[in-house]
Image (cartoon, rainbow, N blue to C red):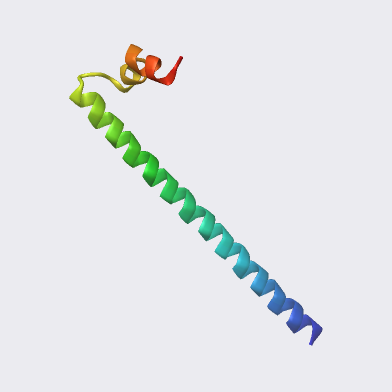
Length: 68
């Protein structure tokens, strides 16, 4: 009886750990997708201005807007 209860608790704990791990993975994948979309927007912006991403981030007007 005690063994069956322990085994059930172990299965429940394993299920909870898997559920938490999947939630974390899904959250990370969502964040990576948002980053990819943001980089695509920046890439398109840099292409429309005939600049590389490095030049876009280090342009003088970008520094003056940020107060650096």
